[in-house]
Image (cartoon, rainbow, N blue to C red; front, side, top):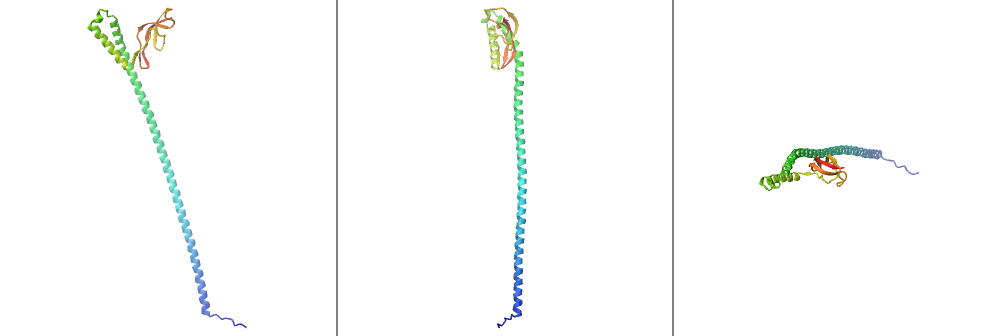
Amino acid sequence: MAEQEVKNPDETMEEAVEETMEAQAEETVAGNTEETTEAEATEDAKEGKGLFKKKEKKDKRDEQIAELNDKVLRQMAEFENFRKRTEKEKAMMFEIGAKSIVEKLLPVIDNFERGLSAVSEEEKSTGFAQGVEMIYKQLLTELSEAGVTPIEAVGKEFNPDFHNAVMHIEDESLGENIVAEEFQKGYMYKDSVVRHSMVKVAN
C-alpha cells in the first residue's frame, strides 16, 4: 500500500494565498480594460458631437454667405436698372428741351427765307444782302450739325406723318396724292417731327 504524501500545512496556505492574489490581479486588469474602453468611447462621442457642432456652424455660415451674396447681386442689378433708367430720362429731357429751342428758331429761319426771297437780282450783289445770306446759311449749318433737317415735300407722295395738307388741286401731270407745292417748310429733330410741312396736294 502506497504511502500518501502528506502536505505541510504552511505550503498549503502559501498556495492558497498565491491563487487568491492571481485572481485579484486578473480582475484588476479586466477592470482597467473596461474602464479604458469606456473612456475611449466617451472621448469618441465627445469628438463626434464636436464635429457635428462644427458642421452645423459651417452650414449656417454658408447660408449667411449665400444670402449676403444674393442681396448684393440684387442691389447691383437694381442700381444698374436705375442708372439706365436715369440716363434714358436725361436723354428724353434733353431731346424735349432741344426740340423746344428748335421750334422757337424756326420762325427766325422763315423770316430769313422771306427776306432773301424779296431781294431783287440787283440787290443780291450788295454786301448787306450777301451778309444776310451768309448768316442764314450759317444758322442752317449749325442746326444741321445739331440734328435738325428739313422735310422733303415737293414731288414726294403725301405722308400725314410729315406733311400737313391745307389745299388740294386737280393736276393729272403730277399724279394722285403727290405734293404739288410747299407753303411752309417742315423740320425734324433727329427722328421726331418738330413741325409738319404745310403743303398743297394733287388729287
